[in-house]
Structures are given as structure tokens and as C-alpha cells.
Image 1 (tube, rainbow, N blue to C red):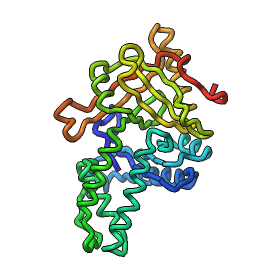
Image 2: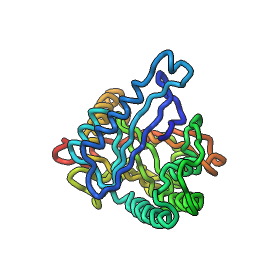
Image 3: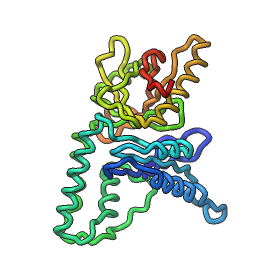
Image 4: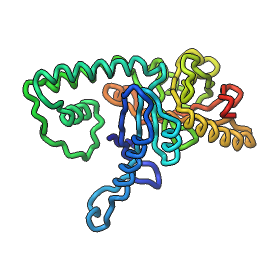
Length: 302
């Protein structure tokens, strides 16, 4: 679970449930139904008398998959406003490989010391080390029997590998309600350009390395002098792509009457660690699409 550092106007503080699936097959309806049930439980669990001294929050759900999502699961997610993130694109291949190898190594090392993997302790310590523990969360003492398993060493190893492989990921907000996960080829280059140009024009094209039946990868690049300064990549499930482009087109048509540019993508960045000393955060950058003619659509999305 994570908490958004900014409280949106006319809303409660936002918390996000995060669930990740790495099963070698597309995520189907059962996982999405479970997500909807969880959200309904926590968002409706509010009683005036019992809850008067508690901060009320709005909970959302993000479901990640290394193998994408089935078509029914995509439609169900959109209908119930569950954010689905497809990690099957080429921009995430090194990250997925690192996670799978690290998980196998962790299980192998832990099995020498304990009969049951200490998942609760590992989850808590990782969140503390990465700075993703909610500010008001109650931190419990170890519940797991660790034996001789050096969990702190494992946590630091995972953190180091994560930093070496990922080099940053960005939250992106299109005109629709879905939140997207975007990976820059080089985070430092993107930030350097975006800080100098908080609002700038970009092109949007398809990465030919990944054009599957149920998802495909897009590449975002700045137009003009900064064209070679950075590239952003994101893999969209087909249903999400269809909605995002449709909403963008509606916005573009509205703005065209005013002589303005077309649709846009908002990129959110909240610096952490040493980056806090280099820039004040959080930051919001607006990437404006140069026009629908730059987008390469599927025949069934036109």
C-alpha cells in the first residue's frame, strides 16, 4: 500500500493498494473481482461513532502483471476503475528478469534457515527502506521466526538491484481516469529537460518490438530541439489504450476550437532520497501531443 503525497482538492487523502502478478499467463477476472471486493470493503467501512477520530481516506487499486491481462479482465477493470499496469513490454524486461531472479534467490537462501518464508517481515522492512510506508502506519515488531536468516542484508540487496535496474518510473495521467506507469530510457535526461520545459510538445508512436493482440508499447519523445534528449515508454492494454485515446481526442477537439494544442499527458514526479536535495518536489509536467496524425492506431480503434 502507498499513499499519494498530495491531497487532491475536494477529496480525501489517496491510498493505493498495489498487487503484482508474475504467473506466466495473463491475469483474468478472478484477480480483478478480488480487487473490487477489497476496495468496496475499505471504502465503505466508515461508521460515524467508531471512525470519528480516524482520518478518512479514499482507497484505489493498482494491479500489475508481467504477462498482461485478458480482454474480459481489461473491460472489468475499466468498468470498476481499477488501474491495470502491463509489465510485459520491452521497457520492463530487465526489471522483470531481476525480480524473478531475486525472488528465486531469496526463497533459496531463506529455506536454509526457516520453514516458512517471512513475507510479513520482508514486506515491512522493504517499505521502510524504500520510504513507502504510510506516515501514520503502526510498525509492528517481527512476527516471523527468522532463525539465522539475515533479512536486512536481503532488503539492502533488493534495494540496490532495484536502483540499478529501474532508474526511475513515472506516474502519468491521461485525459481518462486510468493512471499509467511510464519508464524513461534515462530518468536524469528527462528530468533535466522537463524542469527547463515543464510544458512541452511531444510525439507519440508505436514501438514495433511489442505489438501484441491485447497490448502494445508506445514511445513518447519531445519535438524540436529536444527530440533526442529523452524517450518515455509505456505498454497499454488494448482497452486502456482505446479509452485513453478517445478521451484525448475529445479534449483535442474542444481545444482546437480555441486554437490550442491537442490532448496531453501529465507526468507526476515526487523526488526522494538524494534527489530531494537537487529539486523541490513534487513536480507536475505536462506533455502536449502534437496532433492525432502522429498516433498510429489499430484498425479496430479508429
